[in-house]
Amino acid sequence: MIALSSFAIYLKRYVENKKILNWYLFSIIFTTLAILAKFSSLLVFPTMFLGGLIYIYALKKTWKEIGKYLVRFLSFTLVALLLVSFVYCFHTRNMTNDEMVSQIVFNYTQQKSSKPSDISGAVYLSAMTISNPITRGLAEYFSGVLMVLDRMNNASQHIFFMGKVYDAEGAGVLYFPILYLTKLPLPFLLVGGIVLLFALYSFVFDKKRLKLRFLNFIETPLLLLLLIFIYLYSVVALSSNFQIGLRHIFPIIFAVSILVAKGMDFYWDKIVFFTFFKIKYVFSVLIIFLVISVVGTFPDYLPYYNYYGGGIDNGYNIATDSNYDWGQDIKELGKWVQDNKIEKIYTDLFSAVPLKYYFGDTKYEDYNIAWWGLPDENSYIAVSVTKYQNNVFYTEKYPAADNAIAEGKLPYEKKYSILKNNLVARIGKTIFIFKIPELAELSDNK
Image (cartoon, rainbow, N blue to C red; front, side, top):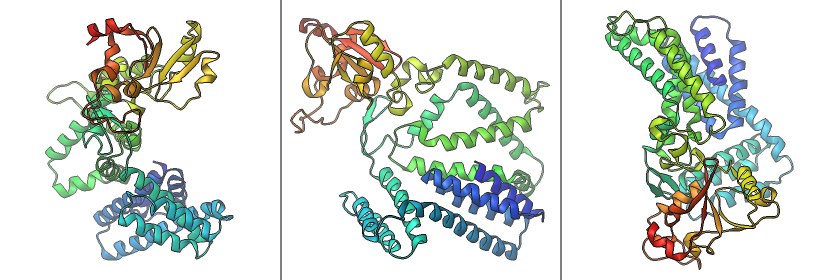
């Protein structure tokens, strides 16, 4: 956001014929920091290029100015990439050419799922490593970019979403939009909706010519850059099958938040449609409810869902994984185990946390009801919400204990739903503890 903001200031000062060198350098520095911090930040380059091109063309309207802009943006990109390469030189200075080529080839050409484009990319990167320190640094950086793209294109996952478990094919284009509408606070969504309605009304019913309306809209280049960024990032996110949490579209949410804040400021003293009531009073009430929502949610921000998403207690029926359950209640589980003097507990937890650290002397055993059926009678089993939903709603062939493929659907007796009447505790929001009943009692559950 700082990179986009500094570039927006540079654009505005450029068209106003003011001094631009400082902001040009600031833009390069912050853009470099952005793409060093996160590979997906490479999207700022097409965002800046398109936004700047539209802005310069709309206000300067000469091919000469467009040519100057293209040359400056090319130098902007090259300098930023040069700085990235400089940073990566420190990571590669002790690596030989053979070691770098071996790393790249291992990552991209040895995978059965590799696409021809991935392999050709590996070839180009391998060639770059034998040139000079500058290109070696860039080769290592773009190696990371390709790793991210490969992770997105070849997602290995089990996704629970809206009553079904999906594999590598993903849950479809509705995954992120539904999470956006169910995990963000309702007051924020309402404020955003009001701002959008006012903006559309002002744009459509403005008596000025369409060209003047557009020029008025892009008068602030940051708004144009944010909209382009949201569009490009949305295209990438919605076309990817890699769907393990709302966190992957946080840049979109942040950009939308800035636009909403700007809209609130602009329409603060506007009159509500066909009334004498100023919209600032509606905004104020919604902001108060938003603050109450934030305070009232503490400390359960990760599993938060709004009212229409089922709330904090039932949001897991929309989606799990990092939307709800990321192992955050393991410490509390350890306290429950020790307070209740449990001698042994079976666990099927969505976490890599070392349980012994929290369980003390209590014995535990990793368990999977789908492989081994029910554990011993009168024993306890702790199940993460993510593991519970993935087990109960998984309808395809399921791997058996001997690594063969079980024919047909997972049988009922190997689903956690058979224990639904035997819940003895819920740890935090994300861990269910069941006590295994005698076999005679299970028929009632079914």
